[in-house]
Length: 131
Length: 421
Image (tube, rainbow over all chains, first blue to last red; front, side, top):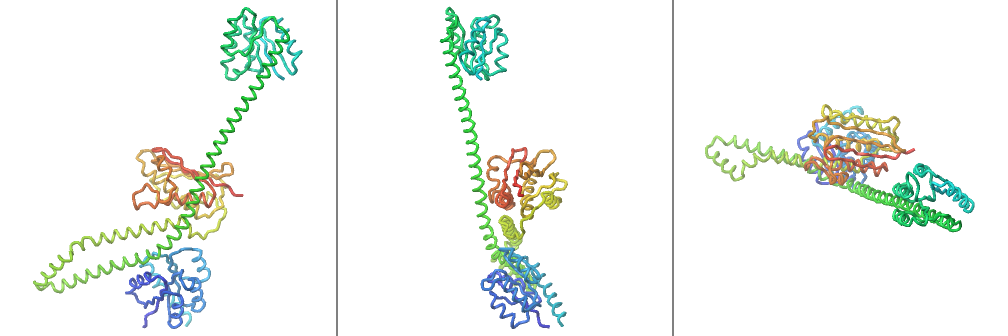
């Protein structure tokens, strides 16, 4: 069986690199992108199961990105990873987007991996319902 | 009506004096007394513009009475004129020494008698006016001084809370900016130590594999010396623990900053019952204090504050935690107690948190609400607890927060929040 894909979006390289190092042993294929535009490109051509997205992105507002994904790819499980500059914004996302989990920086690696694994299960359920 | 008291043991003189004065000076009432023993009582019960005393009287003479008048605070400024006969010059000069205002010789010459009395009355009135003005002025001066002091302390408080508000904005920014790099520092640190453990395991595996050959054992021994393997094995766990503590401390500070700036607050203002806040705080702190400190909550009914519930919760929690630390530090044998009380006084909700802990000296009292000020060991407290509470009360709720404390006796934090209707 082909491994499922988890897409990580964060405009800070240091974060992506740290994430890559922590999830090397897991049962999914991670893809790391630094901006919303590339993220949307990748989603278009790949079957993404879970995305882990920062909220304060430079090119597309995090809420906007998640809203687009929600609308066009409702089966993708969405996890927010954020430095919480403004919880109003997070609250806003929860209102607009069916957010699966919400993790604050600095994150707990085990917790994040658990959420991602749970998210993968959720994604499988989403796909089954569809079939 | 100006009142004049005339005292003389001769009834005739009294009648003559009364007739002369009342017949010539308008608005004047003359009270006459022939028994000098009754004079003290009369003087203490009625206010006179002028007192005329005969010098020579039985039982108690005019000079004695004059002395007594000058010794009484309430009447010592009353003008006193002495009645005298021409051969009394020695007694007369003594009277002036004691404080007599004037003298009138007997037998009475009408014009002179009246002139002296009129003059005395005018002067007495003027003096009284001046005195009254002076007293009023003193009172006003005191009021002004008080007002001035209040303005100055309000200014200082305002400055303090404005400063805190601007620090709040800064804190919000700092918290966010640090969280990103801290995110990958923490994550990389964990990964790095996994790598270290893996490398050491790999090394052990190699050693095990090659250990059979004698010369290779020698090789490992030499290599371990070169790379100071002893040091690596000894220190690595402690380095990990220290780094872990450091990162936790940074996280704690950032959380405190977040609380302080209340950037995470999505709450709206609402009318919140103080009783409810007290209940929340009680539930949250119960486990921490049980069997250690007796904490009592007393709250009048129907006390409401228009605020963000979570914010006020955090503020009161901070104050209570601070009190609990002061109480735990005390070496006294008495029961450790904290009293949290809320009442409504003059349209203000007054919340006091009093403890019987170690108390604070003036130096600590002065800085107790300053950001990052703490009396705890380095790394134990953030020094933002009371600052957060102070900011919430003064900036967000437009109230005041004060501290009263005695070293060894305990501390009271007094919060006043204006009632919003």
